[in-house]
Length: 589
Image (cartoon, rainbow, N blue to C red):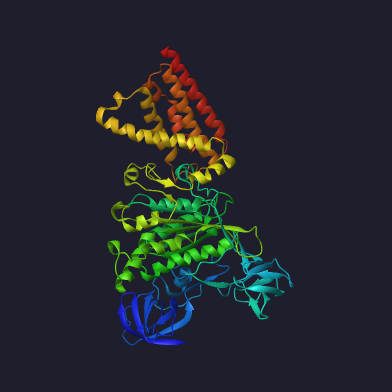
């Protein structure tokens, strides 16, 4: 055990002497209250420690004790539906023990040591196993079968394995390693948060992560195992977009990291998600969610750990063969914690005071995403982590360092626009400056799994929106009457694409989630009207009469038609539109 003494206290930073034998990133206990900290810098026998709790009351000469182990998370049954702080302390249990206010230095295990779990083994005595192999399963929630894996780095033969009810610490079996050493198997394992869990092979992102949000799936898709960021100013709907992604994305597990944002946003998650039903199973969404809350009123240093805690838990479920979404709200607050610690360490500041290693730290988080062949002997077990981070640039200026560093790393940019939000257009993703670098890679997937004309429809719609932007500049100068009927039709149909397709109501039962089939049919309906109207205008129909057709109201409300039977109703609306347009053309002749 390595002991040192406090030399200096500066907010969450503590400098201790007598720590020459300690290691970087060792967890330490600081002061008489045994506050939790982590060594982040060593110079000679002096160690700089970031403390994850309030440091008021610490004094020069107080004892610092190193555990000799890095900051790690406990991985096993009991994580689902739980809510942790940034260093994986269960907040529900802390509330039961101490009430609404945390007591400094309190130590609580992340996993319940008393609860028993029913373990069903999948291997037998005598079987050869390697690290990552599935030993058995625990039914953790109605949506998640928790697959108990042999710890990574172990390789040997199963000597003993038992079925039954066990706590996370009780022995479920014994494995004899190649060295001859026999080790106890339990339902729980630990892993350092700053070390990425290994895998066999990283695969190209060739499959869509369906979100049920039309603006995302159709225009700016994200692949399974992909990375995305959501920059936007205050009030533009970043949190609502992330909530929608957490609710409706076609993933097995969601890790939601509330990093430095307001506590009421996490309260909204806790109040709303249990009431929502999983679209595939009909069960509560909380049955497949792990929440990590390190809100703005919690110690700033723990924000830095919360991101790594979340991605490590995600990697653990990925190794089971699950598809996982990690949603971080927001990485700007995390980076602000890095800036504060960097300033207290007296490091040379970079742009706007952020540390010089800003980009590399962001990359360390996002690069842990991906679709992989999992560790173990089963080559068919594939897991994926999709990382989605909100960015909160000051004043909505995405030229600031955090946004620019993030854009250099991620493949999808959903740029939120305050002007759209003020017009009540949600999600307020600006279609002119957002992009997805997965679009071309996913084109064959859309053709094969959705419809042959999917990519053509989306390209046509995007071209019209870009043309609309150009025409609006002309309209500002000379007025809409100076445009040709064809250009005025482009303005009308582009408005329909924006308001009837891209705009989505998160509070409407029929519109909150939109399947790919309904997305394709809805866009086909709007573009079908455009083609029919273009023919009618070519045959002499008046553009104003076309714009005033009552059937356009039916097109506008088509997105609120329930999934079941929507195709027949869409076809009926389009047939009515074509008949009305043909009648206008006849009257013109």
